[in-house]
Image (cartoon, rainbow, N blue to C red):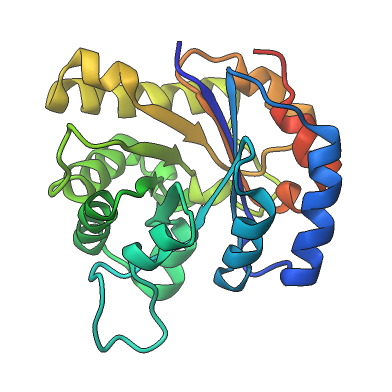
Length: 249
């Protein structure tokens, strides 16, 4: 059985003071569970706070993005080795906002996946289609392209996590129906199986991200190919995020 991952992507919210207050409250309402993993992706300025506050606990943290080089003249960038030094277990790659707003490509994502693995950090590669692509029945084609190109430099012996984010459901209040979500996760699992074999495919956790809330998390979590959630807005409130992660397994 794949462990469920409940990941909170804080995006550009919460500074260090807010982070300390959040973590104090959150640690009081959640407990270790062998079948659940909690992860936070805060702004970079909070990573040291996360490390100092959570080191040795069951809660993990990671970066929202990274560069594909380990060092160099790249003003404003963060390297995978720096993230590793700050205790990051995971780092997001190819989040829809990075793709849509900052123009990140699948080939760039592939370089980041490789660099993170080399640094000992687990990439969480995000894939998903826009509303127009879904309307034109291109979901399968889009997911296959993002996976084939985004994982083109990945060594299958290295750890990897994926997140399916239908772009049309992020921050819109819309959410993929259970049938839509499971169908997309099955597509992803099939691509992995054909490319890396059924056994390796079965080991990889695939999270769902897209307006996840306590009132829809139970039904989605029960689906066989959904291995947890990548949560945006709802992860900013300790009690709300805890409720999502405490969904019966």
